Structures are given as structure tokens and as C-alpha cells.
Length: 370
Image (cartoon, rainbow, N blue to C red; front, side, top):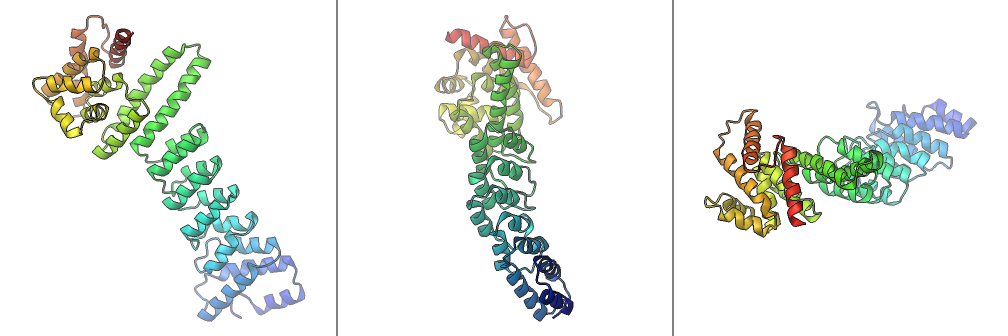
């Protein structure tokens, strides 16, 4: 009968057809299934034996077979699918590792609703994007957290967005997501906003800060983080980020000024384009209008505070007058010049810190609006 099932095994099965013996034989059959020594006839016999044992009435026998076949490459697809669709004690090894199961198989099993099975699939060495999307759409928090912590899982921007929609208040999900090796900038911005909201609540409840003071602290931290995330993004990614922030009311006047003070002209252009509803190409022309009327018109159309426009003009003048040689101190030199020039125009500023500057300008805007 070949190496999968010896004559001694046959004798044992005939003499003692107990579940324990059948489980032992199942393990042997599973272990030999991928053997390179099997002839074609012996392989077919071993596969047929696996089919029989996959229908055994005793769970322990089927579970032993599943454990033995979890990494087998020559297990018949119908056997793998039967085991994966079995009770959890049988299904988990196959679901966790078998490469024989297709994406369609995995999606169908996910939709059957077993949280334990969903968790096993989420932790597979490789998870395709369609399978990941299905898990994120229907699986519970724990399985989604496992998926996001799985470096072998392909999770796209859409899936990440759905995960935030479903589990934005779950630290298990958001913190695991934040630790993924790569995140789209728009997704990272949403995470920053969530963390900021939690931080504000913590500051108010644990440090006796007023909500307004806590909001100021959080806003400064959020704005710095977002601009650091946005640096180096391509035009399309930057456009998605800015559109998302605008939709959720997170494009503040101070963020607009801060972006220019930090030398991030691309972000500044993208923000004005979205807020004024003007194409980026046209926005760039208006911003660089030598007479200054283009920038003023754009600023007004974007409904940004007139009080900030002089500071923006100054920052643009410094930007145009600063020669950047690509060195590591370029941006630091530019920022220092921007702050110094703006401070000379506003006598009530007594510090050279960018956060202080932006905070004071923002406070002036609030006072004017009141």
C-alpha cells in the first residue's frame, strides 16, 4: 500500500478501529502526503484516504488530520475546504496555514460568522487585500486587530478607512494600525485626529485644564504632526489628504499659516486650492502673482481671516528670497527668517518660537472674529 499506510496500520485498524488508532493513522497519512517518494498511484491512494478520514464521525480524528495537513501542498482542495468548513477544533489549523484554500474559500468562511475562524484567517502568513477587506467589513474588533498587526496582510487605504469607521474608538485597532510599516497619509491623518480627541479628553479630565486650553495644546500637536506626515507626499496623495481634512473641518487658519512658515509650499497650495475651490494650477499662479492681488483674492475666496494675510505675504516674500541649496539646514534657515520677519511686523509678539507665533496669530484672529 505504499508509505502512507503500511500493512501494520491496516492490521491495527482492523483489530482496533478506535478513534485513537484512527487519529494516529490520520497523522501518518497527512505526514506522508507531501512525500517526494510517493508514486503517482500512492499519492492518489493517500489523497483518497485523506478524503475518508475528513468524513470521520469523531472530531478528534478530523482534527488530527487537519493539524497534519495544515502546510501540505498536495492535499486535495475538496479535503482542505471540507476541513476548513468543519467545527472550529478541526478547521483552525487549515485556516491558519493551508495554501490550498483560495481567496473565495476564505471570504465565504469569513462571511459564515465564526469570530474564532475569522481570527485564524486574519493571522495567516499571507492575507490578500480582498480577504483583508472582507475581514475588516464583517469581523469583530479582535480579529481586525490581529489582521492589522499581521505584516503579511495586504490592507489597502479603503480597508484601513473602514477599520477606522468601525473601530475608531478601539485602541487595540487604532494603535495596531498606527504601528503598521506603511500607512497612506490620509489614513495617518485620521488616526492623528482620533488620538488628538482622546488626548484632549484626557487633559481635561486628568490635569484640570479648561477645554479651550486643552484644545489649543492638542491643536498645535496635531498640526505639527500632520505637516510632518504630508512632507514628501505626491500630488494625488496630498490632494486626498487635504480634501479629507476639509470635509471634516480640520483645515484651520493656523494650519494654513503653519504650513507656509514650515516651508511646505505644496501643502499650502493644496489647502488654498481646496478651500477656494480653484484648480491647483490656477492657485499656484495666483499665489505667485507679483502684484499680490492674486493671493489676496484667493485668500478672500477661501474665507480665511484677513488678519493673517500680512503674515502670509511676509512668509511668501521670505520663501522667494531664500536660496535653498538642498542642505539639511535649508528649512531651518527659512523658518527662522520667516519668524523673524513676521515678528518685526507685529509688536505684540515677544518670542521667536513658531508655535508661539502661530498661537498668537490664531488668538488675534479669534479676538477679531469676536
